[in-house]
Image 1: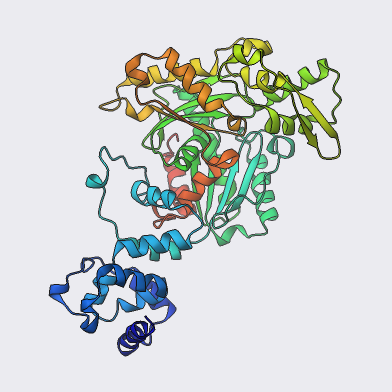
Image 2: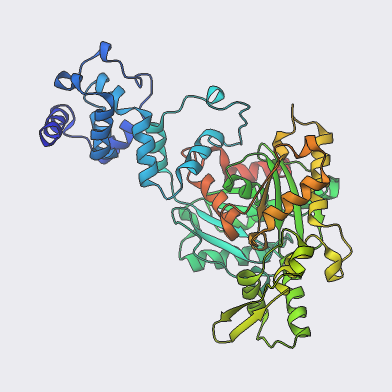
Length: 482
């Protein structure tokens, strides 16, 4: 093996001993007309007797930079080095994202919009993963800001997770209101805490799920909120902005472009149908007047009735996250011994019993908490009925994937219970193929969906709006509803 590698490097040194760092990226971005390897059309000399698998193994050991240099030796070497198996390996080894997320993004989102394939490989365009690797290596890092109604997540796109999660409702108030001063203060604070300068990199920002109707007034409210976000960011001299709905980002994190997103927000729950990355306002969004705050408040009331002392709502929130769950069968769970304890730092040990599953039950039976509203399962079933009646696709498969998102959506057992309730409500044809997915990235699903976008080989490209483009669109009043 040592002699073989020595010959390889000897061959490289004859043809390309002066390749620089810039040339390395240029080799990665070469056209793919010679990608297919054809031993009959060229020769690698003494290496002709080596099987393809061994060649690929050698190149894996060399690494991406040295492998790219080999493509400059001759057309035959270029065909060998361009093998997709090699660069798929490098993408899996050298990236901060899971391979399935990278593959989903590059096959479904690279054009700047969500693509839909009825089949699979047969309908996908031919991909050069060598070119994709080179493009991703040159993608600038981005600031990602997911400003939820309860908690905000922000961080660098090259990081594994958000670097900050402040309480939005306490520090900044209602970010769903298109108030320029409030949004500008919010963005300035985020950049200050990240210790980065706004002009240095693009930003991917989530748009809150609000103004649900398809009426002219709701469209105008959504447009005003989006324009205000753009104005606040461009006034900070951000070079480019990519603004996408939170529900769509959560769907991308689940590696889907179509489906129904159930977002359990801070004050209410939204059921959002999405087709090819676009929110289907015309189909109709459903809302349930129960959110994370209501569940926390319900647990607090239960503890107060038992005279259990606690310091703050943060204590209740921690107990909810650590001890609460959703029962698959509520009536059966009432007869079980569910008592368990948890120690909160600096406050001591807390013991909960039936409160553990009664808290999550109000999502399905709001009357338990004194709320007159339909249950979560009923809202999702109604949304699915609307999607079916709209006949937007040749079949119903696009809305049969239900993706949960939001911190409260991480309650154990919620996905299983919702799927069970839906199967009891829907007709056999409607429930065929139904799947409910737990939050793909926990409480940070929307943030990770933005990360998928920001690390695309074609980013910023068609995904972003520059300040000049925004000013031109504003003059024409042509920024459409998101």
